Length: 491
Ligand SMILES: Cc1cc2nc3c(=O)[nH]c(=O)nc-3n(C[C@H](O)[C@H](O)[C@H](O)COP(=O)(O)OP(=O)(O)OC[C@H]3O[C@@H](n4cnc5c(N)ncnc54)[C@H](O)[C@@H]3O)c2cc1C
Image (cartoon, rainbow, N blue to C red; front, side, top):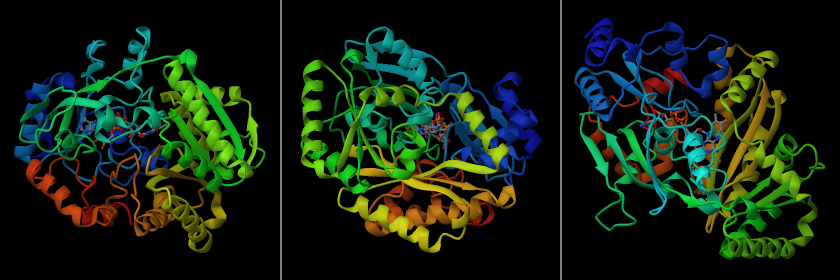
């Protein structure tokens, strides 16, 4: 079927107003934040999709997916557009973007059973605002909270700033509804727990639009006690000390809502007004009074145990203020791109990995060493550092952050600067037994290492693709490596 015929058919199946073919919108839909500099410079090297389609119901999604499946049309599901790893980038000539714009209803808030049900296109901030009115919270707070939507948040396996207490999205999802490429609609019911075979929620959670389209999600909700919140901040000698304190708190069973440690370089970006060229360690405790008191005690005991590495405690108000200004609105996201264009520089690129407590400091030091020794554009690097921001009883994450000035053609930026850095981080992490992606997903730009990440378990992942998307119409190139696309658009 010709591209023109595909668009005509989409209009026939839905309506003209639900099928957007505006050239600027299609160019915008061709890539996400991964290639934001090239995109803003209008030198994107990927094809634009044929149309952005806005279904109004699960049934309409089923109709569109069935049509695409039968006619070999690649489908990129889309929510809030905050993807960072190329999950929204298009590598196929015949592609449509399936946008959740009209799936924007909060279906039910059930405070007695502590759960809320929303359509995939509801922004997290909108549910959070409704919940706050009745003294509840989702507990989910990625920095993209004002913009990201539930379908995307579940599909990327996202995590929020208060994860140490509330968990990642996978700990919050109770049940969901999703649609497969053949049009089949599956509804996973809402129960507190069950042992009815493997946990099929995980076919949808983290699928990044490669197996199914998520249409509806039910998440847990939590009572919120903001008046009890407590904040702690410390300047510490080095990253290892910070990580040791985090570990001490976690292995003793405490669940602060925030537990983070920043390298000196990364601290300079966030805490320039008080960091005094030192690493920074921060905590917050929240919940009902008794829990907050116990958590504060646990934090103070851990800090005392490592007091030789603690330089000073900082005013808790500074930490609280910092948290209150951490989230990014759409305007912040747009302004960042303006800044890049003005300065020809890239600030705040990240690669987030995870490993056990013993391994994380080793990966951190190995990455720093290798970058110093072999990163080809070291002279253009203006910052390289990192922070641990999500901790567990058995380990933590490391969020490498790097900034650089761009001295190459805009279309080459990713290959010249980003790819060599990401490669070092991913290789060092996998070699040490960690995971190459803690929470941003694989997208297209880590797919060349998906098989290394999973090893012999890649068999299981691959079978999911074979069974649920046998014709390969869902988000070509994302998660599952496509050599042709990798060669053409990455290397
Ligand atoms: C400023 C900023 C801060 C961020 N902070 C965090 C953070 O703290 N924690 C974190 O985890 N992430 C963070 N991210 C990354 C991003 O916000 C998350 O990955 C988020 O979950 C993406 O949601 P979205 O609605 O924007 O999805 P999109 O960007 O629209 O899509 C993301 C991926 O999910 C797929 N997808 C979207 N909707 C569906 C659907 N309905 N069904 C199936 N697949 C779908 C897409 O195809 C794509 O592969 C941040 C990003 C930005 C820009």
